[in-house]
Length: 305
Image: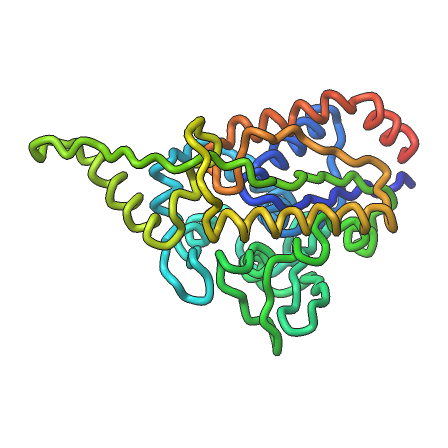
């Protein structure tokens, strides 16, 4: 009887589309993980994979433009700056319906109990509820109620859930660590688009409308990476970078205590936390890291047989 291969998918917001590339590249090499665990965005991609919906998710994320992302991020203050209902409604159309127990592969998501600070392993109940809880980044997405607790992003306590993967029955674990996105933001542009004489295209008007709406709450957070005069970090710049720096330290400590058999770290420096429209680049980075570790992965499979 061969050993069961598990995959632990880490958190990292838009950088998580790299998980799709990793899973596709593994499948191309005949490696199909039997067990899946995920934190934050890893819980979303993991649920799609466990339910044989990865292809549908990939097609959707590759279709996203910057304007699409702005529309999906319904910005209003309701326990979080970004309510997230629109994006989750879109994802509900892709993820399998029903409870976690109905998935094709053993799967679990990790979330954080806001009161106790403990990790909560979501191994049963509605799939979309588990994903919502695991992805609820503090300050950006509202917490989710689960039984008698409020749950937030699982990456706060277990950014790459290797131990959870083993508890689900994995004998060997491949961990995908997306790394921390540190603050490298350039300044915001003060240049405004030309209003002209009212003859702007409909797309331009919609873009301005959503940009103005989002900027009210989240500033120009989607403008990471522009080569302009540096400006003082905004509130969400600080929140996002601080959370990710913390997660990086927690990841190092947890992986030292329970190291995976193989750790994959895609090169994602050019992708910011909210760059959900850069799926093609993220997926390519996931495929590249698998190609770079092909020898190690082949040895893992040989030993597991």
